[in-house]
Length: 167
Image (cartoon, rainbow, N blue to C red):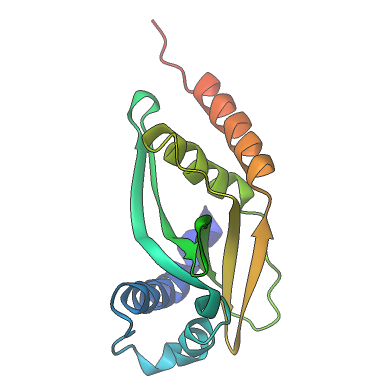
């Protein structure tokens, strides 16, 4: 937590700018204006090949599990353009260095998938992934949907057990 707070002034403005550009691009077709210092992240993101195959049907979608007091929002839910049945849940992460290594966010995506199933039980999301936006490049990392949900359920249940109210 200390490291996060020490570096927040660096990554938070970048993350907000890149996320805003992606949201504008996916909802309007135009990313609008963005701060020039983040062009190295935004241009490769908007030029990524995923946008040729998929279109967004939800952006910055907020979810909650009211019963357990858990909430979050994912960056986009994509639908394959030539097969409207195929859905992909995607989260965007920015990193400061071109050679930064991805880290495991499958539990986070599993949380989104789990909460989606609470609200939309008949909606079948076949794939999940992370768009890693770095200076000069964007990569898409696939995440196994079933494994992500299992990881989320385990983490959620462990957290709830440790934080159960005492009577």
